[in-house]
Image 1 (spheres, rainbow, N blue to C red):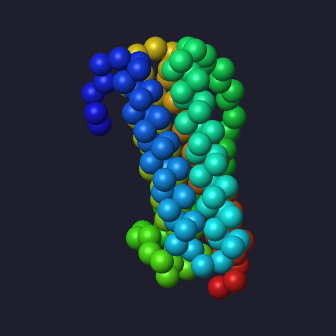
Image 2: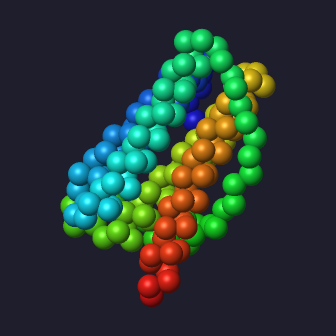
Length: 151
């Protein structure tokens, strides 16, 4: 993982990671064929925008308002095969890709929390990891309800 010189470097890295997620979900939504699928991924892009805004606000104002919550992990993402984005992607493939991305984002924030230079920043990254685990859970529930139950 990248070495950081300051808290601002860490926050800039996290802000860019959120922007990458926004771009990913926005681009993915454009490639999908059904309006429901597009709407699902556009909604996730909006959530990632709110994460980015939160990080920017924290950077600018030094605010650290963190809430602790436990999130269930269905572990579906651990057992599905990775897929690449494409214009003919099925809903199942899109969900798998999203689960994998959210799992990677969770790991990123968990690693950043471990490297955080102070407790406030550590709690911030733990909170962001929690948000990403919530996203993964939503995708796993969707996968369970619409893919596993149909098969």
